[in-house]
Length: 300
Ligand SMILES: NC(=O)c1ccc[n+]([C@@H]2O[C@H](COP(=O)([O-])OP(=O)(O)OC[C@H]3O[C@@H](n4cnc5c(N)ncnc54)[C@H](OP(=O)(O)O)[C@@H]3O)[C@@H](O)[C@H]2O)c1
Image (tube, rainbow, N blue to C red; front, side, top):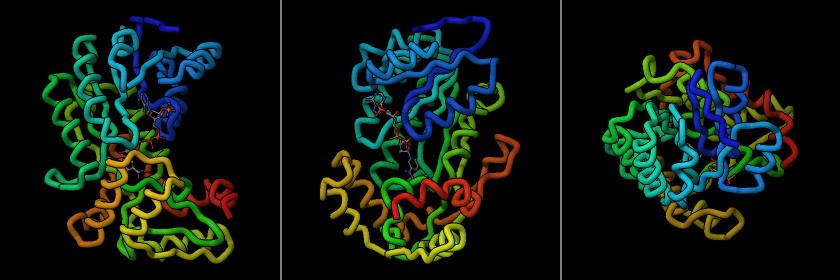
């Protein structure tokens, strides 16, 4: 069901069913000042959400024929792509379509990278940012660092241990609820306040031992970190246990390699813009662990 309500701005959320998208939709559900439009590439999902009375459209980033209908009447676009090199062509074609559809503001979910970084996945996101800027549409670029939620996904706790694939190097961590709060605030306020700005989200610098110490305290049991190497990540990703697109997998291994050899040493730094946007302090790793205790523990 497509709703075009010109009394308030329409915001289209790409990745509505993913971990960030869901949190953004939850955050925006508090406001009546926006028309929030969900999207999915799965027809059954579209039908389910439609039956719940949601404004939802069918949009497959791999099929540009679905873009015009999804973008009709959209003022602000949240652009998120999945873990795949296809993000390049997906974003290029969607940005072109957004321009034709008259979209006024694109909020892009990118990465925490220096401008000249050479990791492929980071470079793909940066090329998308430059393409958005060249489109002439107002933009806001979001730069989250390493998700705390990776401890529930790619590197979960198991038998009292979790793995880090960059040895004992530090990473800058960010809670997804903070990423979503920043995105929701920017989408809500629009480009007049947030256009042409970059926001960095790396709120706590911790290595594996420091993460293990916090988890041990919060979960009230001994948790240890298995320090692993980038090649161990390659082995895991090639094992087929985690479905991952091969180019993205290679880029993930290269990322860990560059964190280890120092080319991406800045990944271990803090740069916290959360409060500048939301007015609220960011979530500490300990607070996140307390809030996610039940999700961390079932894997043990
Ligand atoms: N993990 C990290 O530490 C980290 C750090 C910085 C930045 N990032 C960035 O975070 C982004 C991923 O965010 P996430 O973790 O929220 O992703 P996610 O949970 O995997 O969700 C991806 C979303 O995109 C949708 N999607 C995938 N392919 C699509 C297609 N062809 N057409 C339409 N929708 C499609 C998925 O829909 P379905 O439900 O249909 O699959 C899902 O809703 C990536 O761009 C990554 O570079 C990650």
